[in-house]
Length: 344
Image 1 (tube, rainbow, N blue to C red):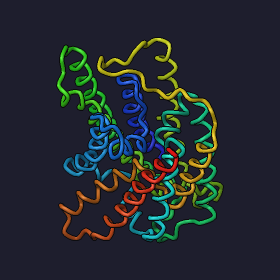
Image 2: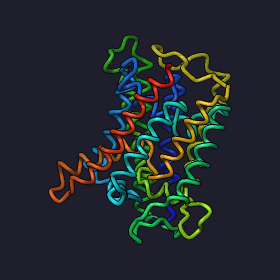
Image 3: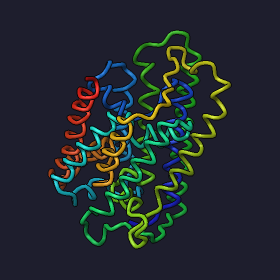
């Protein structure tokens, strides 16, 4: 899979748009593993399942509009080349690690590092290092056509224009929704859930446009320093996602006394201690991530993609859906086990 700097940069910007908007307007962090766990086993606050539904809606919208044909990767096709056993093991490690280590790539890297959180910086360094070691010690056996490479893939001008239009549309849609909510004195629970759904949808599109929903692109980045397989695309997310988030947080942390939405309050993590649970969790997550290149966000998006294809494509192989479901199942089970273990 070739180097896709433009697509990944533009997709990364959508990740920034969704995560920074969630933080400024609601005071919450876009940590998908925590959102997923709380949706299933937590307090059942409406914002969490609304965000998950938004993530699931991304592939549906992409299929209806035909946008999916322009994405620089196919997560289902990549997962089809991975064994059930490897996916089950990876899912277990990812689920256990994200709960014990309090986050994954979205919560720690995209949101935590940008806030200069000591815990997130240590966790990100730990799981990245572990993932790189795992991906090189136990590389995926894939077809030659799917092996990541550093060949440059420049999209056509029309494709670039399409993605920019999508970004502009997302910004406009959320701006209108935000202003509507700010101007409405009383809002129903359903209307209050709308921004979380829309931001989840935008995040989902960001993962797909950037190619980060395809585990082989992630594995290509983790194959460093083997340059014949190294795909530096993920570095573009640092430039268009993490860096803008850092600038955004620096501008609002001392200026905004409370989230813009009146029903919310600041929920930004303030812990600074580095404990053994954080390290062990980050190592476990990094090992699982390095085995298959999947973490909860991309897996949720790929799961939705599988169900869309199942209902729309008569030639779709159900086994492909079974594989991503296996990863999600073991992730969720391991999350629950980790929560029970760490609470004792």
